[in-house]
Image 1 (cartoon, helix red, strand yellow):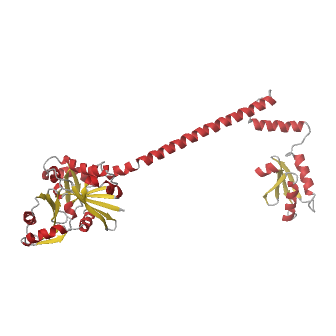
Image 2 (cartoon, one colour):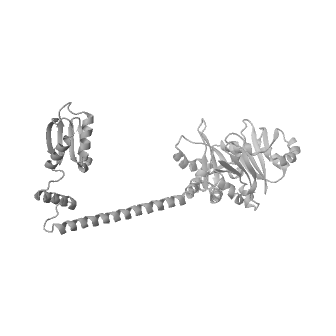
Image 3 (cartoon, one colour):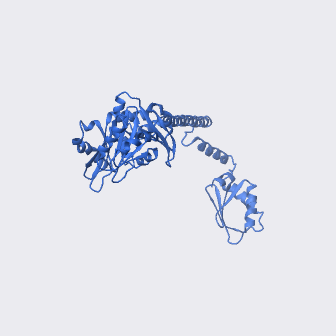
Length: 411
């Protein structure tokens, strides 16, 4: 998983017609720098798509950080109250600005970041259009190392001069665009920092250029600029302007990525539901045709008899009655079952084992005298009954149920 950090130039330099060159760094989750460089935002599409998250470091001159005291409110109520809290500090209508509040300190004072809504929406939409999976926007001034009692600053070279970034405390900072004049830039930095010592981060190419003028500025230390401190400070800044943009944030892009899979899944579900209903209707039609065919067969055999039950059950009953009327005993009648049982019983050495004999539900229910039959004899009797197409079950010890093999299997 990787995060793409992009430092976007100040809006003033863009409005002046300067090229929109953006320093960028591709960083792994462990903080290791994978790739860095500078390129126009429109040329970073491949890296934007490949990164898990894009963090935009908004130019310090485009973000105003205010220290505002607010009562303890829920997140939703604080969001609604922010325009009124910053109204006296903002030139123009707060509704035209994106407002994001940080955590409150012990005295209830919060840092509120203010940025022009139209400008921020353009940048976030541009990243989403390039395929960004998740977007966060952090003020650049909070991405410099925090040094208690001192000022951290950076002079970022741009196409229209220097972008000055200053961090005056943990929650305060500012920025402005300066002409590409090292001596004047350092004097401006010194004036803004007051009496506090300043650590100025410049690139390796700039360090030699600023070394001599820096000697004339009191309490000014030059350090080489690198992405490591920008990345570390950005991850702990505690302010993200992207959620305040609204539906143009990262969640909108995340849903767009699932749009086609969801459509395909819904289509597959629809096809399966329709297919199941068609198959059910076909099977229902076949069942209706089979019932009608059975009813017609019954009527053809018994034209004068009303159909009062299922055709197969009424046909089976009529066949049994016909056999009984002709003197043919059915396989599940008492005479047939008792005769077959008597023949099978002849295989046992003792015949006086029966305590009671009962005929019920087309089956013989036999109770055996205690301690008269062992397991071997039971198996011998079971085999003899099987040869006569009868089955024997033993629901309880000493009780047998004898019925035709098919009926016995169902019992």
